[in-house]
Length: 173
Length: 281
Image 1 (cartoon, each protein chain N blue to C red):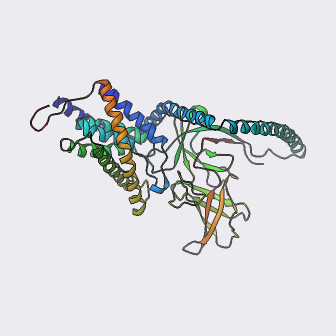
Image 2 (image 1 turned 45 degrees about the vertical axis):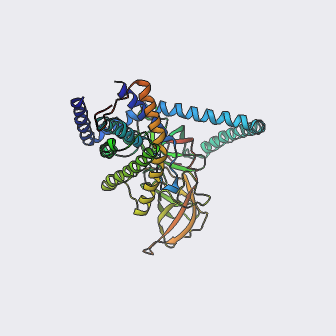
């Protein structure tokens, strides 16, 4: 229950922040991907199931606050969350470099995935140059957004007592 | 624990499939309700940001604020006097029209709305307003500022409305040039990357493009572009922008004009929704 509460709180906060930050034209109109970073946080720090739940919640909010058809963002974020969850035991998630790297990669993948779905449905038009610039911009903003989102997520989880112990390879906690 | 996680995964996957296949009317309802629920959070954030900004500027610029306040008081007094004389002129105009048998001119009712958010995805150029169906806002109503046309209402929920800006790539408007009277279609040209002055830093807007202007029309830079009212969405006579450059279309049958929007689209805080039109004189 407390996990659900913290997830909803985090998603709403990320949604508000994402709406308030402007999309600079120099980066192709890329947005700060706070919502995607919430999903990446759950993928790397919790379980794949929670990452998918976060992907659905964040994707739902992302679609309702824009003109994107309902479900598109959830599909993209779900795939990204699942793929990143596969690396959970292979990386040090508390590391700043890890958060920056995965934030950048996740944001770029989200931009590309969403563009593929929107262009396939003929809802947006974007040349490859502009798309590439937007992906680069998303990557940079993802790298910047991830550490504060991870900090907020971890702080909230500690406050509500949601932290789980993790098994190491030798089964020692 | 493992079983619980499998259940969560199955439920989420089913929910995603369900959401992807919802009927359009259902999607519209869901989106509308969610946007309405989200507005209080946005309002709180704006209050915090603006309050913080006002506090900082009052601390750092106290003397300047005082001078500005005096200037604004002088301007208010001047404007109040103007309002009284314009009201007298309007009354006289009405009496004379009545005596000469003229019908009433267009009277548009405007509703002031606050901008509470922008597109969250970065793929469209839209605004969210804090007024919706409950306040009388309907789809396809024009949205303007004192400077010019901003866009039109794309979708409406109970307490919010989404406005599609004229510079969005999917935006189209039937226009005419005020000087020559030539008709054309204006379309949004998206967001530009260059750094000219009219291209703002945070939300740069590439000029709009006006197509299908007859090749024999006399079009010059700085010509005003107004809505023609022929498209059925925008009322006629709204200022869209100014021509900056003209060139022939690839087919050489028409001319193509680049137009810079008259309204300042980067930092919109308040806009007017054109609520009704009572017919033309």
